[in-house]
Image (cartoon, rainbow, N blue to C red):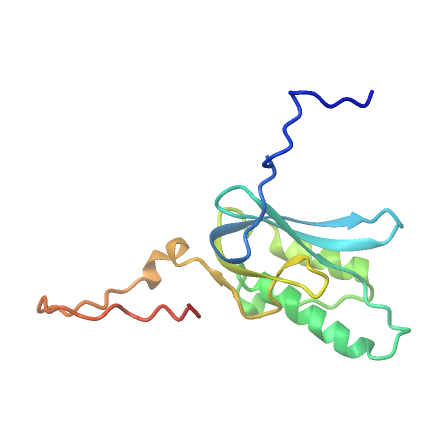
Length: 171
């Protein structure tokens, strides 16, 4: 039953890991309600990078019996809205639910298949628990390649040499 021989490779891995930092050409591949082993429901956003590595972003119900729940609820709404507005116009992202299950169902219904095939530029960081996460609000953008109309030339029309345009990236 337990056996180690030449067939067992102890070096390397066949698992693709979402890289730390900026990922170009990532896609959201699914949004769903899942159930944890303890029976609690959670909202799951699934992402795949251009190399096929997967990353999940999970949102759990907020316990309104705990002090400070309002701040946690506001942060959660901001995170979910941030993801949704990468695929929907901001004025279309309106949700009013009485409970977490209703909230999840409305998120899924609003998104529909709007995310299918849309490229994203994402930044991932390590959490305080050493898990790879997408950053809170500010580092997920529609990929420029997904919206060619937004690409513009910075070269002068007279053919003179110019300095490269700033990318806005921190490195």
